[in-house]
Image (cartoon, rainbow, N blue to C red; front, side):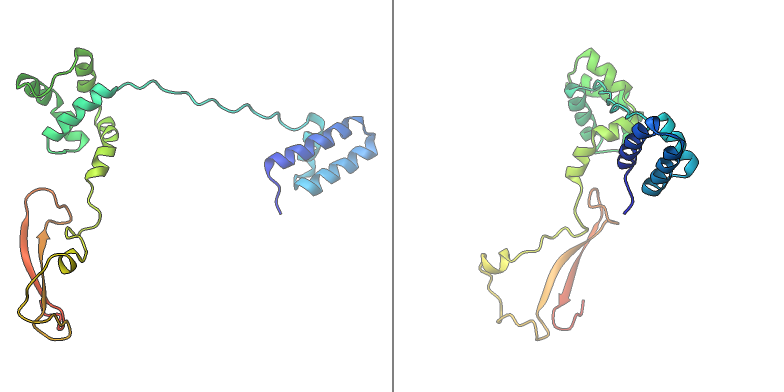
Amino acid sequence: MSMTMAEKHAVTRKLSERYRRARKLEKSALIDMCCEVTGYSRDHAARLLRAGPPAKRPAKRRRVRRRTYDAEVLFALRRVWATLDGACGKRVAAVMGQTVGAMERHGELMISSEARAKLLAVSAATIDRMLAPDRAKLALKGRVGTKPGTLLKHQIPVKTFAEWDEARPGFVEIDLVGHDGGVLRGEHCQTLDVTDVATGWT
C-alpha cells in the first residue's frame, strides 16, 4: 500500500533525528531504510535526512471578498429581468440603462442613487450569476408538460359510453402536443394527439 505524503514526512522526520547523531556506516543504513520505506531515490533520501523534511505549510487563509451587490441591487435586478421577459445577462446588460430609466419614469422602480449606479455597472456574467437561483426555479423538468397521475380516473366521476377496455380497439388517450423545440415559454403551436391504446394508431 502506498504511503501518503504526510506519512513519508513523518518517517523522514524520525529518521532525520537519528541521522544527525549517527556515524558514517549508520547513516548509510538509515538512507537505505528511508529508501525502502518511502520509495525515494537514494540521493533524494540522503538530502532529506541531512536537511530534514520540509516544514508543514500553514493552512492558507481564504480571503473573504466583500459583497459588492447588496439585496437592494438584487431586488432591482430581478424587477428589470422580469420586465425584459427573463432575457440572458448579455441582453439585460445591453439595455440596462434605458430599461432602468423607463421603469423609474413610470414608477415601476424606486432605488437609491448608490444602488442605481451599481445596477448600471453590473456585468453580463455577474447578472447571470446573481439570477442563477431564479432561473433554476423556472426551469422545466423534462419535456412533458402533462403531469402523470390517476386523479381524473379515481377522484372525478367520468361517464363513458362503455366499460374501459385497453385490449379492444376504440379506446383512446388524448393529449396536447406542444411544438416548442424543447422550450415551453413563449408562443408555439399545439396539436391534439389521439392514440388508440390497443393498436397504437395515432
